[in-house]
Length: 292
Image 1 (cartoon, rainbow, N blue to C red):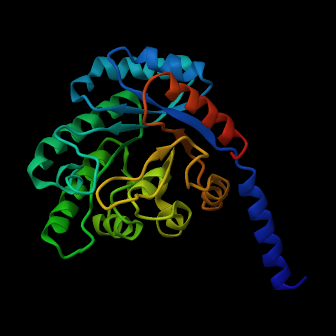
Image 2: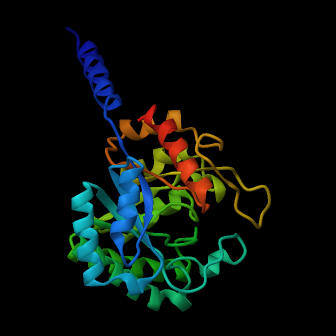
């Protein structure tokens, strides 16, 4: 048996192994004062996982954390991350977005750091092993003073997450994959990860999601199953779409995730409200179950 044949046999076996990995599906659940209600909804829709999203830091209490943990156990639902929305003004576009979103803007960084600390402590008390947020429009120039100060801030963030036994996940969107890769490398700690949002990568015009995995794929710890279109002008994001109706090539993206060793959840995100949101989530579940 030649060495080439042995290598080919090993490769084929490895490919067969990952392609049969079954990824869990999940959905976004908002943190409320009574978390039991949201997790009941998650269970009723047939999902074994969810991401908890919170834009109100007043909800980060020990009591709500305890109730969330118990509700997750009672409903047999894995909370994969606490998605921490940060206080202050946010404008989701290309004009005001760079000066309002995430940890990049210096003027709001202090109060947002405090909110992230609260989110981390809350997640610890709830038994959740990561927190996630948008860091913002990370500068492309690594010598830019705003980039340098951001790295110092992110080192602080990852340290307090580490002390709480957690990883810190960057939500993709406002930065190119190579800038995100450089940022993770410059932070230099062991606990950063990526919450891949393929819809965001398209809607912000930053990358084709499948190609992006070649750059940041090894850091992916969570995935938002979201679809979208590229921008059509230089001021506004591209449009979000129901899964399967945008440009995200899920039949290629999911196998590539598996080939990189990804075993986490695919968390369906549909950024509309009302009955149509639930219907789109149900349809996305059916669409993704065939691919997972």
